[in-house]
Image (cartoon, rainbow, N blue to C red; front, side, top):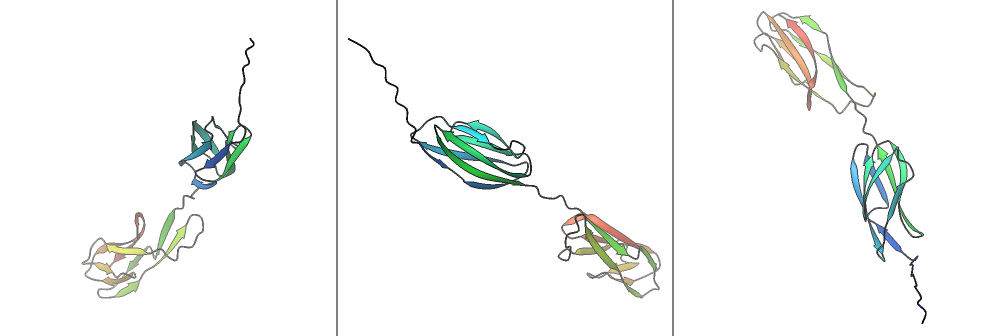
Length: 178
């Protein structure tokens, strides 16, 4: 009697990915999951490791967004391939500055003066939606209104401060002498 060994291979796989298109921020991670029918080993790959690096874990892969750009991540079983297009973006680190004018002023008791300010973004973007809050170091000497109109009080010196609303670290000042 003769023995015969037969190995059956299936090349008719169906692969369904949890996403076929992703947009990720640089530095973030995302898990992509594959459902394979019939179940078999998945080979994960990316076309550009300078955009996405992969940490495969069987039916899933952790995507690490390491660089700005677009790449394709693939799951391959046999001759069947499923793909996910991944775009990585970077949020620009925009800083703001305030310039109050004038830097210093001398007023008479009871006099008012309107300070002005300009907010500038490091990337040149529109700052028209940004606002400042005003404060004084000595309310008996000078008090600013919400729009920067300073009312002089008694004799002395006070520092009027304009701070960017929602970011108190961005500020500029005007020294008022009465």
